[in-house]
Length: 140
Image (cartoon, rainbow, N blue to C red):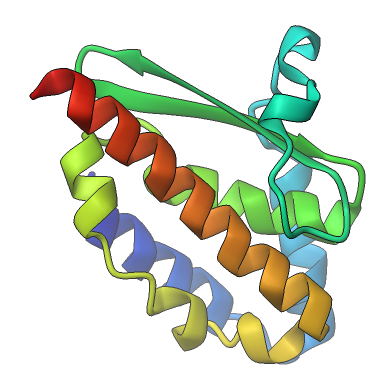
């Protein structure tokens, strides 16, 4: 699936819920299904800077696609990173670099987060794109 297809799928899923209580619960459930990062990668170098909670992300290349794993010590944050991992994992670095992230606004996520969590979300997107840039440089 393309990144855009996955984003549209996420938008559709979030539109099924009546209110933000249900959406938060859905995000928590997504966080529970997150492909967890191996404990050896829960290091300071894998922590995303700018997040209030601790969020660890690990990336590696498999067949010219980046596979992300992650974890967080906060349940909502874990749900947020789960949405981003679902969107960007198993994608080519160039596609991640060029991907729009307006689906985040379309599901209303940013406006329903505290300012510090919203900043953390921006930091998560930036970090995933930085991994993509680094791996794309290796492919060139």
